[in-house]
Amino acid sequence: MEETSKIDNTLYEQYGERWYTAFDDPIALLRAENKVKVPWILEYLEKHHKDSQTVLDVGCGGGFLSNDLALAGFKVTGVDLSLESLKIAEIHDRTRSVKYEQADAFHLPYPDQSFDVVTAMDFLEHVEDPARVIKEFSRVLKPGGLFFFHTFNRNFLSWLIIIKLVEWFIKNTPKNMHVIELFIKPRELRDYCREAGMEIQELTGLRPIVSSINVEMLKTGVVSPHMRFTLTKNTLLSYLGVAQKLNRPLDKEGP
Ligand SMILES: C[S@@+](CC[C@H](N)C(=O)[O-])C[C@H]1O[C@@H](n2cnc3c(N)ncnc32)[C@H](O)[C@@H]1O
Image 1 (cartoon, rainbow, N blue to C red):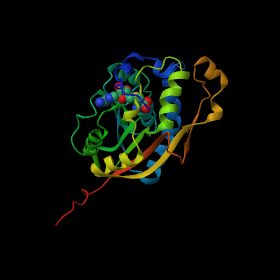
Image 2: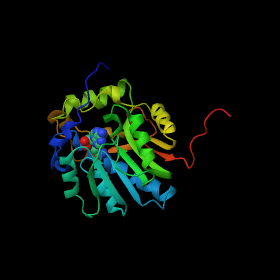
Image 3: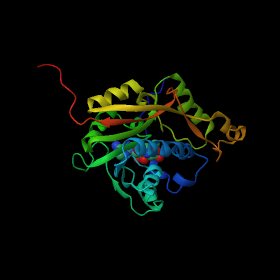
Image 4: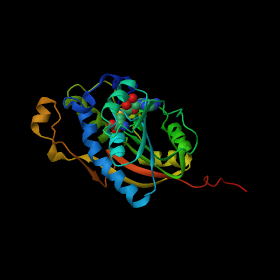
């Protein structure tokens, strides 16, 4: 766990159409993960928050989640710092309904209480001060609104598998795509949510299905189109979850 490098968030400018087509790159893993995240989010909304209509997808990248949520009927706004990624996201929006805008997660250009749902997939581990962006997410959420997240746990195993094995075995893994210091333990995330007036409702682990990783993939560095992820109780590697903005501020101590 000796990483001391700074995260490189400029690398998302270079992907272009490769967001959707590359298998010789860890971006293929994000696409595979999205296939599990989308149904989990939709199922939760259907069960617990049927009235949700508006979604803000922060750090939307190439628009995997934004475009799928738009297809499911939500009114989606996708924001990212990377203009090149936003262009690709827009091209792949089959509904032509998603509002893609360049914005910094730390200063969202929306009034308080604008959205029913905020999503941030594979995003929190890309910023130096996740507690501060979570406060900003809470600001733009309506009371009772939901914040869905996916991020990586911080421990030796996640360092080995998510940083090192990906670097060693997957072609074109950019330097400093992830740094261990920015990975977040679930209890830290729970505290950040609480400080922002939100309470985590559900948390589940997400991991690759080992049998979907074939030898060919390890030999060639190209992710198999059959590579799959699955939900798991174990949150050691990465986790997907949802927090709810409380209807009233958390009680302060004292009289
Ligand atoms: C790993 S990608 C995740 C993309 C997408 N959420 C997904 O799951 O496919 C992280 C994204 O966060 C964006 N990003 C990093 N810092 C940001 C910031 N301060 N505000 C907005 N977007 C940011 C990057 O440009 C990149 O597109």
